[in-house]
Each structure stands twice: as structure tokens, then as C-alpha cells.
Amino acid sequence: MSTNRTFTMIKPDAVKNGHIGAILEKITAAGFKIVAMKYTQLSLRDAQEFYGVHRERPFFGELVEFMTSGTIVAAILEKENAVEDFRALIGATNPADAAEGTIRKMFATSIGENAVHGSDSDENAAIEGAFHFSGREIY
Ligand code: GDP
Image (cartoon, rainbow, N blue to C red; front, top):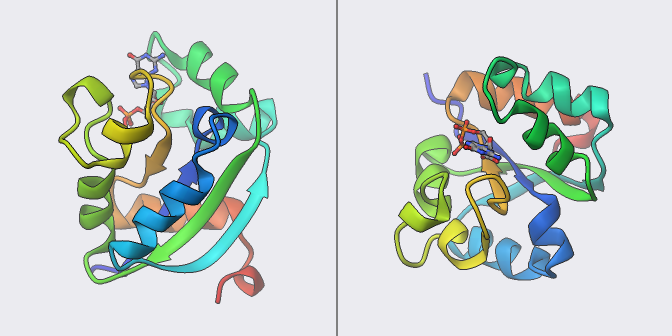
């Protein structure tokens, strides 16, 4: 069953490059409602746990280093078909392969520093949202 919610992070590259406002504008213009949001920074332990499924991948060290390198914006978004529609809005992992008009095409610089995260399933959206927010921070 779809929960109509997904989880996103505006990653350190996009924050450093001044794209928070433009990315939030694209997200809300696409019909997503922000039901939780915070400006924060991941600790080493946070990033290792959040990306635990990628632990064996060759890029894991780089990914953790990048995701802890600066502040992020974490948010839970609500919309019908949220997970799939948000993945379409952000585009392919590698911005070189992302469709025109997608957030990664517009704001990402590389496959690693790719501006935004978007959950890949309803199950992971719930896990990732709960990683960052308590029940009383979700509206
Ligand atoms: P996503 O679901 O599109 O975010 O992609 P994945 O789940 O496959 O990967 C998670 C994150 O790891 C990506 O968003 C990138 O930030 C990073 N990543 C994926 N592939 C690579 C890679 O080849 N090199 C590096 N440095 N980072 C990568």
C-alpha cells in the first residue's frame, strides 16, 4: 500500500552552492506538501547508518565523507504516488543521464555529489523519515 509520503535530503553540494530555495520551489511547484523539515548535519555514524545498504559498495567511503561534509536539509514530503513521482522529479542518479528539467540535471555536479536524495520505496521512505524525525515533528 502506498503511504503517499517520501523522504528527501538536499545534499551538502546543493546547500553549499546556494540551491536550497530553488530546489524547494521545484518540489512545491510539483505538488509536494512539506510535512516535516529541518536544517541539520549528519555525523559520521548517522551517514554510515543511513547508507548502511551501500556498505559493501566501492563508493561507500566517498559517499559518507561527502554526506558529512556540510549541512543538509531533510524533509518528509506528501503527495499521491510520492515515492515514484519524486524519483521522476529528481532524475537519474548520475546527472549526466538525468532528463532535462529534473532537479539533478539542473543542480547536481556528479554521480556522487548529486544535489538531492529521494527514497526508492514506501518502506524506505518510512524508515528514512523516522531516522530524521520524531512523530511530533511531522505535521
Ligand atoms: P539514488 O537512489 O539515485 O540516490 O542512487 P543509489 O541508491 O544507487 O546511491 C546512493 C547515493 O550514493 C547516490 O545518490 C550518490 O550520492 C552515491 N553514489 C552512487 N553511485 C556512486 C558512485 O559511483 N560514486 C560515488 N562517489 N557516489 C555514488
